[in-house]
Image 1 (cartoon, one colour):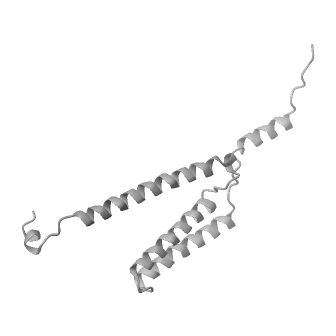
Image 2: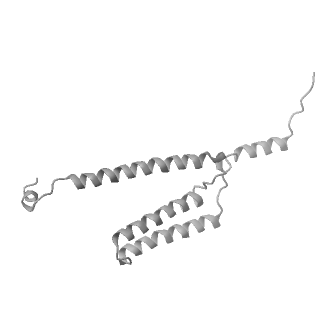
Image 3: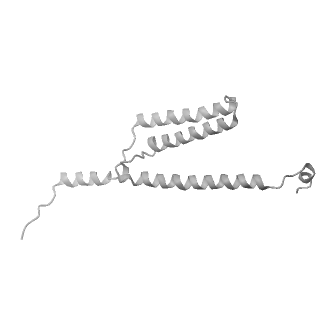
Length: 134
């Protein structure tokens, strides 16, 4: 009958420590949170300035630029505040994120498609028709 040695107190606490942080995502430092905050503030101020001052002549270009900056801001939030990276939780958080983005993209594209076709196919209203509306 072989006797298995019991783990020492040090190895048990090390094991507990390893299991308590086994998710693989590092928690942010004050420096990383401040960098994320400053980037998020700048990425909020730029679209506000673009829209309020009418910097670009084209409304379409302004809208596209605001949406692009919004996408960059989403990435900043995920990296600096949610600590998402390919190494956290064996890559499953990144896969869940990609799946979520695909679903959101499909929902947005479908909504825009439906709204465009409703706008195109709606019967035009005259001023007299609008006056008689409840």
